Image 1 (cartoon, rainbow, N blue to C red):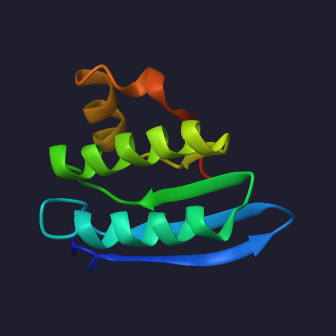
Image 2: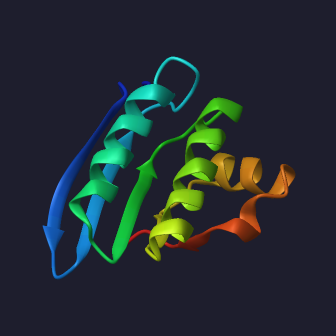
Length: 109
């Protein structure tokens, strides 16, 4: 299996929704870039931030920390944060760490 290079970007903003697409591994090396991108997403001021993680196949505790911090920011800003398209390995990390209940996780579109 080829490993997709890490990439994250705000790809769409419309109707109060900000979409952030993430691909590749989210780990200690890439987590800070994801955190910066999510900060930019929140600064746009939408009422919903969707993090599309359909193309994320690995996430370590550093990536999980970024998502937990994003959820805390969403709660502070009264913003709905949605994780979209979590792959089985990512879902397992959320479940094993007991953080799955912190997030709204929707299937891929």
